[in-house]
Length: 297
Image 1 (cartoon, rainbow, N blue to C red):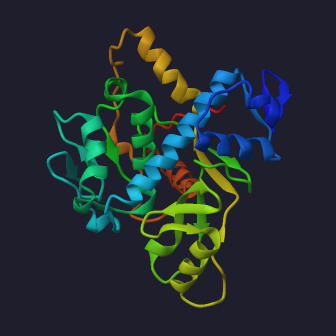
Image 2 (tube, rainbow, N blue to C red):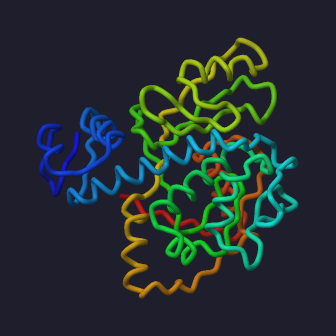
């Protein structure tokens, strides 16, 4: 169900008010059919949210076709023209390299890259945000990127919602509690619509196929893999605000600093965003300085 400024609108009314692609119409249909109420301040915000979801889906499909490999943190690889591989298996943007060029290179020269699946989700988000914001604005905001698990620049802004009804562009988690190896303890996956999901190292599969594949990597048949009801999505409101803030700042990059020693270096591949946030909270309780920005919408 969709609400615009507190008023409910259905498919026949919505389709006359917003302009989206054919893929966007499918997203709109799923939003309309959902039991969850999706609230927007204007029709334009709904349009833009659908566009961002399309960018996330396109990024997932492009990463699937890029020839990148799955790897645990100790086996992380990257094009050293753009990235330095840290001792913990993260990718740190090299000095003097444009963030847009470094993110784009992962999709252009994927055979030089190997990383685990949580990192893959963050790369998908950065690429989608690059497509949405454009090169100049993206480079203004994301000047010192570090790719490691679910760690993000403070302007990426992700949130968690509890729902069993993903919308195309959402990231879900297939939990595999009966796993043989840590890298198969679960699979982060982008929902692409039509019952299909992209998971790094798995490819594009249905939920049934994804679960079956994970079960074959299990230690025994005691407990099946299953999809969690925890959905990750960007704060669309915040992503939209980045274009407005950049305009208000006359295109000047904000004065920003990210302390990468505050990243939660857990060395656990393929974990969910929920679990990563739990690990971060543990670090905070041990007086480790960690900055996490949440803007919920």
